[in-house]
Length: 412
Image 1 (tube, rainbow, N blue to C red):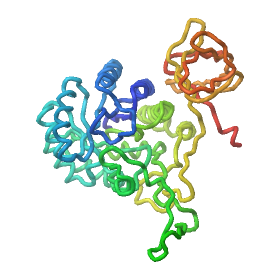
Image 2: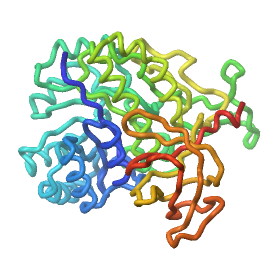
Image 3: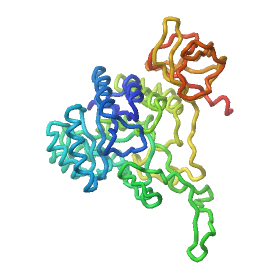
Image 4: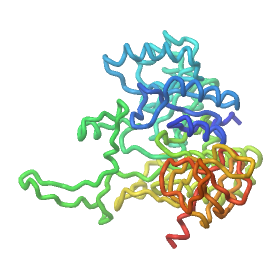
């Protein structure tokens, strides 16, 4: 059985630390340039250094994305940036553009390079090409089935690695190479500025009747014709491992710490349980399903892994998320009196029942006994986002515990 890496996204330094604590084997992040998430907070070089130190102290790797499809004007900046990364020392670069790849090989000859899904990696010939060029790993296109990945594994060298997305948002374009954003808004998805037009509501206008907008129907279910369900493979860990995938990649560099912690902790336990005993994995399937449903998502699909998706993989009647839990904050430190310090994310009040999510897999129900501000002044509620607060929950807290509130009872 090949070693299985759990690769978690990080859109900020705080989220990186959360990913590491909640079970990541590796994290991937973008610097301030040349990645494909321009709207993410992204990392300064100083933050990258701090993140790498934090991760390496805990045996976790850090990969840097530089996966734009570069234009001429980008190349001098790419070279300068790679010279900076040489001093910073990430574990690998994620690249899609051959010109950028060539610069990385010249400036960072010892650096491990992974080929991004943006490069449309759909066959073993592509893998062999990149291996000959010096790439260590290739990220498979989302359009591949498990059988196709098995065939790639059979055809490539043993030391070459396959990375595949197993959870998160699905693009409607081929391997994420989408032209809609550029065409409609002038913001290029392949330069990191996607406006996600696949989630918009569309209408039909006939050429000779301008201004008359007719709804677009697909089997009378609505108008969000591009809106895909999110990928979720938590129930198929055995099949993913059997296919020879080395790195299980989670999508979501713009997600919250709660999302990252929930997904990382659930997949960590599922992978570990299966490798310890397949029967243990099967016994815990209900727990995995329950936990993965506690993060924000757009319903779930298995994507292309078991054949081409049918109409059931799309959501035609809305573009909203399922949100069963609200993120209240992460414990930053704990005082001697048991009060935990948090940077508050959403409103909660004294007397409410909330849940403390712990990295070891426990979920502890607790009642908010008291809230104070930084100066010790008591508050009945926490209505101001980002306020620094101290909370007493009547239970033992530790740094990196996450506070969340269930919204499911309220909906019922």
